[in-house]
Every structure is written in C-alpha cells, then in structure tokens.
Length: 636
Image 1 (tube, rainbow, N blue to C red):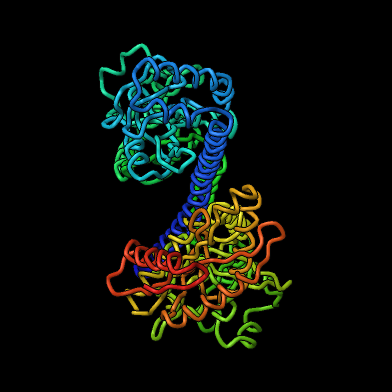
Image 2: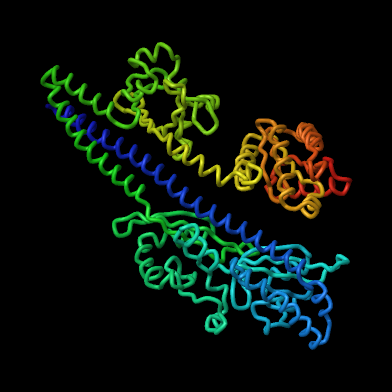
C-alpha cells in the first residue's frame, strides 16, 4: 500500500472512534443531566411541600389561639400597663396556651411569641421568663409586620436561634392594630422531615455569620453546630442521625474532588446539582439555597443520593467505546483486504452494515434531501423495505420530523436557515426530534449530526429517548403545575416570561400582561371556609383556561391572583380578550359562595421594560379596578 492509502485508512479509524466518542459523550451527558435535574426537582418539591404544610399549620394555630384564648384582650390591656398588671396578664395567657403549645411542638413548632406594636416582647410561650426586650434591631419580620400590619413569613435569625418564622398581625375587635404573633419552625424540623419522612438524606447548612460568636457558647442555644463539610462558611446541626464522623469528616473526603465547583456555585446563591465518584459509587449532591427576608442566601439544603443509573451509564459508555474501537480496527482490517479482493470488499460492506443494524441507535447518512443510507432500526421504525423506497415517497428527509412544540423540525427554520444550523444553535439537551412510527405513535429521539468529510454528506444519529422524555415530562409537570388549579405555577410562568421578553426585545413583537384578582376572595374564606375558597379558585381557573387563546399563557400567580401573558398581542386586543374572560367569570354561580367576579389590571410591554416594571404597572391598574368598583378592567 502507498502512503496515501495508509493515511486514508488511519483517518477512517480516527473518524469512527471520534464519532463514537462524541455520540456516547452526548448521550451520556444527556441521560446524566436528566437524572441530576430529577434529583434536584424531587428535593425542591419535597421542600416546597413541607413549607406549604408549615404555612397551613401556622395559620391554623394562629386562628386557634385567637379563637380559644383571651390573647387580644390581654395583649391590648397590657400595653402601657405597669409591670405587675403586665405579669398578671402574661401568666394568664401562658396558662391558656400551655397545653396547645405542647401539642404544637409535636407538629414541629419551635416557638410561639407575642410582641406589642412597638416591637417589645410580651410573652415567649417557649420561654415565659424572658420578656420585655426590644426586638427592633433583632427581628426584621416583627419590624415589617408592626409597620405594615401585614403577615410575613421567611427564614430569619433571632437572639439565639434561627427558623422559618410566620408573623401574623393582631387586631382588636374594633379592627385597631395591637401587635404581632410569631409561630416558627426550626431548621431541624426541615432536616428531620427530609431524612425521616421523605427518605432523602439531607443536611441543613446555616451561614455562620448569622450568629454572633458569643452566642454559640450560650447554654440556651437550641441546637449544636459544627462546621460543615460542604463549605467552610456554613455550619451543620449535629445530632444522633448526623454525626461528625459521617457527615463532616467522611463528607470532606467525598467532596474533595468537586470542592472548587461547589464553592463557586454556592457563591451564586442559586440551586444546583452535581455528582462525584466516591468509593466506586456515584453520589449525587443537590443544593437548594434558603433566602432570608432581604433575599440573601443564608442557608442551604443539601441532599445526598447514591445513583446506580449514572454508574451504569458511564460503564456502558466505556464498553461502547472499547467495543467500537475494536470494531473499527476490524473494519480497518477488512478495508486492507478489500484492496486485494472484490470479495473482501463485499465482506467488509456486509460487516459494517451488520454493526450499524445491531446498534441501539438509528444511523442515517443524508444530504438533508435524500437518505443515502439507513440502518435496519430506521427501516423497522417506518416499516419500509429499503432507503430508495423512502426517497420516492418523500420529497425531503426532514419531512419525517413531527412539527410539534418542544421538538426540532423544518417548520422552525427561519428564512435562509438550514437544519444543521438549527441543531447547532440548540442546546444539547434540547436537540430532540419526534417521528411517527409504523403504528402512528410518536417516538422521541436525541439527534446528533456529524459531517462526513469523505463524502460530503452528514451522519445523523438518532438515540431513542422516548422513555426518558416521558419521565422528564412527568417530573416537569410536578415542578411547573399548580397542585390546586392544575394550571401553570409561577415558576413556569417566570420561565416562559423570560423567553417572551427576549423574543420581544429581539424581534420587536408586542405582548401584554393581565393580572386577575378574585373580588372579595377573603370573604369566601372567612364566610364559608378554605375548602369553598379553593373551589372558587378552581372554578375561575377552569373558566379562564377554556376561554384564553391557544397562544396565551395562563398561570396562578399566588393566592387568589392569576396572570395571563397575551403573546404577540397589543393592549387593545388583549382588552377585548380580557373583557370576554371577565364576563365568562361573572356567569359562574357557586352553589355555596354565589356569584364569582374578578378584577383585571392590564398593561403592554414597552421598550426597556423589565418583569418588575411590567408587573408594577399591572398592579397599579389592578388597584384602580378594585378602587373603581371591582369586576372591571383597568389599563395602565
């Protein structure tokens, strides 16, 4: 053989193994990302469910205390009273609450506290001998509630402990503001729930700067902390389940290879997930930030999960690469023999065909008009005998890709753009296509395209990810759908809104936003109970869902507020649609609550608008709608 032939054979060997390396890397990374994101979503879902449960528990206790004790009379009477009278009232209230506090502790309550409207502590039920101190410079949540007379909840630090605190405003029978009530849960409750109920091994890390160094040594500290293995800036609660040896010493060794990655991502204060190989296993570490009332990250929830699927994926990747390497050597051997014999050429061709036919992926060679080659997986999928038959019934190879939201197809091509460019500009995890099989069912594939420098055509690899896609959809459904109304939640709306505002900035397309608020919704809850209130929410959601256009995005914004994003729509058209929806809502007659109406605040995207500025105008418009009589639309 001459030098030119040898060079070509070496190039083929390198090309095949490079293609296999790239394809397996893409496939492995895609599967790994799905598993990692699933772990993070599961942790987030359990955490969100726990926070929601805590909110309901706190609200129930708040209502129970007001209903079953003399709190309002005693708190109002004690303000500006002499110490003797205050102590008498304090002990009377404490006796009334003793039994209920013991029951509340079993529900995870850390402490119950009452303060006057000037932020001075009246009674700590968990520590009745500690009172009279001014919490103005200690508790941001009490300052907020005593200033605004509004409820607030969040993760905050007190004098000796931190926790998830719910602070409720208190009014006397004349609706005069008299003070605030705190019902809080400890971070230990979060950690215990995730470990023992959700069966997720997790750590609750607290920024050590939340605590004054002297306080750590106090005898009345609620829990014992040790510097965490995850970060030198955060502390971990040590108990019988979370020991220093297992959760600090051993984890420092475990996390050493990814220490720099963890430190960088924790500085960003956003949720993230990573993995590390430790003692022959793959461990997944998911991180969820906990923000304080100032939106600063002051704590983290970290979960650990040993995952055998990722281990298997990496093992399969290695096996495939090794197998293909030896296969490529075998192909090279037959090519050499092909030079000496036409029969050897035929043998080599058949062997290569067998290899491609027995791979789990569909392999196609095409110029993106006609298919030059396809393996049996492709023919079996479409129930065709040969590639030539396919070319006779299809004008273009791209016709097989279904035009559907979430999948790549030729309908997404802009003027002058080719399919290869569309794939390259799409993130790897989103390079997904769908094909109707012989049973007229959609099969989902991850597409990989490599150009063949020898023949000028493209090698298209389609890896079946139908099952993974279905699993991912179910996970995303849980993460992005409001559990009560079954419409998009705020997380999903934020994601779609970011896309829409970028689209508007790039292509100068208009869109409008409407905030819908159920009129006098509090009356439904107060007069008929929260179950009827929930039914009102569901009724409105169903009415809006069937009356918005297919192109509009409808989501629950929070509480009794909903939001509609009218895509590619000016405000005049958005007003017409909103008016139709408003009238449809008003036709609903709930058997218990009666007529349901809603007020609309409407605005249109303007140049240089942000999400905050848009929703500020929407809120102002909604306020006008409420002020001007409700059951109406106002534009800002």
